[in-house]
Image (cartoon, rainbow, N blue to C red; front, top):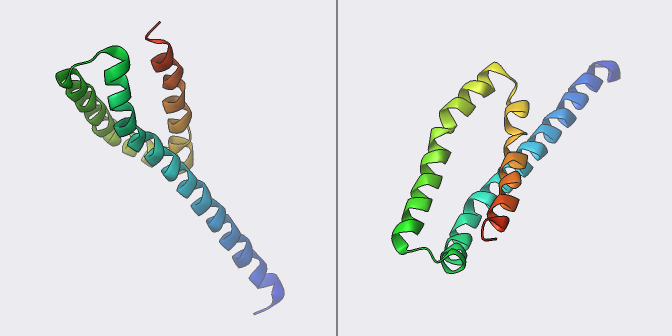
Length: 105
């Protein structure tokens, strides 16, 4: 194999590693936001004076929403490349935090 023939393989491997890095970072960020709800539920309960039933409803709505959007997201990822369908998710989740922070005022 010549050096010219090896260059596209090395380049493809670098692109694969970058794609893996981006996907891993998005996955870690998404899991962080998802797991953060368990930390936030007792804080929201104390801050907003919510009952255990209200916290349960909030958790149920969160779980239902996460499950409900998995099918449309999967279909979008088939239509688009997987990257463009994943990338808007984290900023959309992040845009909701100011809403929650300002809801008590």
